[in-house]
Image 1 (cartoon, rainbow, N blue to C red):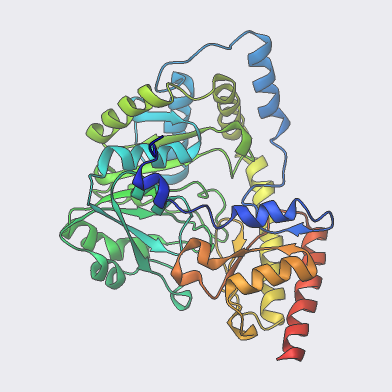
Image 2: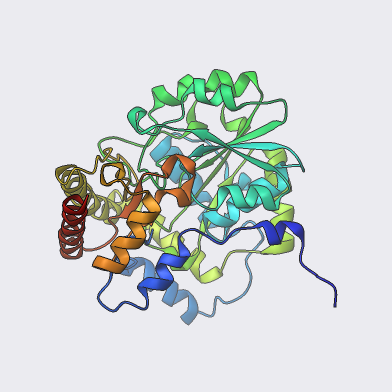
Length: 392
C-alpha cells in the first residue's frame, strides 16, 4: 500500500507542550503550571444562557457569520472597549480564535510566501503557516526590551517574499504587551513593505496597569489588519470554543467562504452564551472579567517576586496569565529544567523552546491556577533550584 500522507503532514512536529501534559496525568501529586486555561468556571449568567438556549430547542445551525445579535454586540464591544470600528457584517463568529488564525492564513498565504512571527510566540502560528505552504520567519524579541517587536528587528526580517506579520499582544508565552507608542513605531515598516497584519488579541482584557491598545485602532490600520479574538480567556469560556474574526472587506469575504466549507458555523449554544457575556458586561462594566483580572494580577506579582528572589531573572509581564523566567543561572536549558523539575519535584512548566529559539533559556509558567497551588509550586521550584546550586 502506498504512503498516503503529505510531506507537510510528515514534517509537522508535535506540540512541544503536549508531552508534559501527558506526563502530568501519570503523576498524582503533580502541580501543573503548564495549561493556558483559566481556572475559573464560566460565570453562571453565561452558563445559564447556554442552558436556556438548549431548553428552548435552539439546536439548529445559525447563519455562516453567526447570530446577528452576537455580531452587533461584538461590534459595539470592540468600539467601546478598544476604539476599533468593524461593522457587524464584517465579523465572523468562529470556533475559537484558533479557527480565525487558520482562516486568516489559509486565505492570504500563498505557497512560498513568508509570514513574520515575533519569537517567542504561541505554538500554533508557525505550523499553520507551514500547512498553508508558507514560510514562517521568526523575528527576535528580547527580554531586555520587554519582548516587544521593534521596528529594527521587523525591518531586518522583511524580504521580497514577506506577505504578512502576526502580532500577538498581550503575548503568550511572555506576558509582554505593546503600548500605543510602541505599535506606532512599527507602523512605518508595515506600510513601507505593504504588510498584512494578523493580530491575535485573545488576551486583550487581561492587561494590567492600563487598557489594551489594538493595532486596528491606529490610523489606517483597520484596512490592513485581521483582528482575531474571542471569549476563552477573559470570560473563562475555553471549552465553549467561541471566537471572532474581523477583517478588511476582501479578506473577510474570502475567510467567510472557507468558513462556510469547513466549519459552517460556530456552535449555537456557545453563541447564545456569548450574547449573555457581552449583554451582561455592558450592564455592569464587565465586573466578572474585572474580578478575574484582579485575581490574576495578585498571582502575577507573587510569581515575579518569587522567581526573582530565587535568582531566576523574571521579566514583569503586563498581560495574559504567564510568567517567562530565565533559567540560565542554573546552567540548564529550559527543556532540561522543565524535564528535571517535573520528575524530581512534580511541577510541570513548559520549556521556552516550545515557543521558539529565543525562549531556549526560559520556561513558561501559567498562573491560571489557585494561589495555594502556586505557593506549593514555588516552594518546590525553590527547593529544586537550591539543590542544583549545591550540586554545581
